[in-house]
Image 1 (cartoon, rainbow, N blue to C red):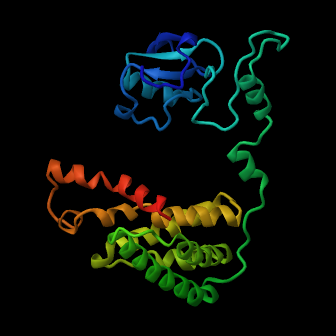
Image 2 (tube, rainbow, N blue to C red; image 1 turned 180 degrees about the horizontal axis):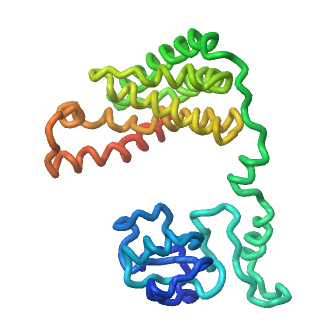
Image 3 (cartoon, rainbow, N blue to C red; image 1 turned 180 degrees about the vertical axis):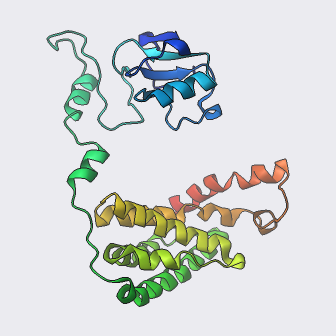
Length: 266
């Protein structure tokens, strides 16, 4: 068991034949990455999950009662709760009191379901020329940002925010126009178009989740800059058409650290 957020004193080992609906599976008998489960810890809600656990595991570790995360933050939910030490609530730590008060906060799903969907205010035909202009402007800016990164300079995040805001405005009016622009592919400009397309797809999905405009802009900027560190990878490795060697793959993996260094300068 390797999850540092789990309070193991509240776990019990159960053979997969004994898994019941409602149990919280905290750990497996194998690494989570060797299984199809997305979350490292989840409540069993469907028989299909039991069958999948039986397919991959011999036994699992479940919580004896409820979800206990000790004094550490649950990384999977914002409104996590901690069990009371006493029935009357006495003896609770400050962390537990704050955690209990946080239960009243809405989950992201509740926020989405209680927010009004963004209305479509323009037809695709009317929005298309505006979306094309926003796309071309954003494409040009992405090229400039990648060149800044290639030179090791600070990345102009304000310029990114400006063009992303134009994209957000277009997607809020009608997402389909800019999504069609994202289908454009040029082999020679793969990294540039990939960064922009991730931005567009992320904002479109955020619109579907009914996120407010300011969050959509943050989401879009994150999508646009997510691969900025690749510009610090030698082009002969980045654009190599053949299979990478183990050494080259290790160099490719450094692009996340390089991206962080670039953005920390901004």
